[in-house]
Each structure stands twice: as C-alpha cells, then as structure tokens.
Image 1: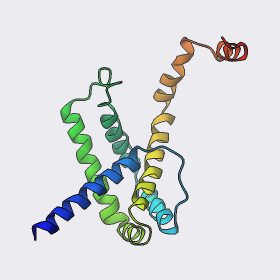
Image 2: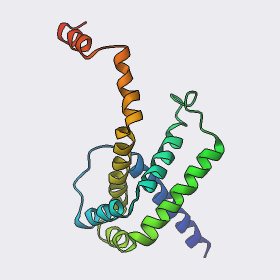
Image 3: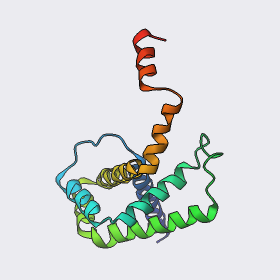
Image 4: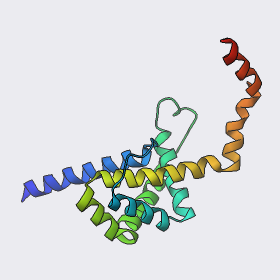
Length: 160
C-alpha cells in the first residue's frame, strides 16, 4: 500500500510540473492532437474575465520571485498565497468540472503533453490580456522617452 501512495505522490508532482510549465511557456504551439484541441477550446470557453485576471496575478506573483525582478516586484506572502488559492480554485473548476470530459479524453488519448499544450494556450491568452491593457501598453510605450523609433532605425542602419 505505501508504494501506491508514493506513486500517487510522484504522479501528482509530475502533473503540477507539467501544468506550471504549460502555463509559463509562451512559445509557439506544437501540433496538437484532436483531443488537445478540444480541451484547449473548452478551457478558453470556460474561462471568465475574472479567471483570466486570477491567472495573470498568479503568473505575476511567481515571476516576481525571479532574482532579476525580485527587488522591484515586491509581492507580499499573503498576496502570493491568495493568488495560489485562486489558481487552485480555477484549476479545480476547469479540470474537475467545466472540462472534465475533455481532460480525461485528452489524457487518455494524447498523454500529459495535452495538459501542457492546452494550458499554454490559456497562458498565452492571459498574457495577451495583460499586455493589451491600456496601462500596461502605455508602460511599455514609455521606452520612447529614452529612444525614438527613428533613432533606433538610424542606429541599426549605420551599425552604431
């Protein structure tokens, strides 16, 4: 009996790892199978605007731990825990209820990569949501204060 618990714990850890990798991977999608496509469609259809905000918050609190930004992205432990709770609720909602059948079929027919690919799609949508916000877009555009498009073009043209 203990061996079964150990195997279950290993499976749970592998599932979490795949899920996190899928959520944080913003690379172009690989060719997905029929069941992965259906799971992706279900996840997108079942995700509300509030859910996307929860996903963005969770991603941000995780990224704020990176050494390159930790000193400027001061996220409190309570904010990180709240984001984790919201994300856990979202995963239960999506995988355990709204897209339960699609999840089972995708896992059965296409394996655990189906989860990673499907959550990559969801992560990409959340990132697009983040970057399309007018405040974020203005923040990104503020780089023009330091270099103009014309100056950049000239530097590239003349190799400066």
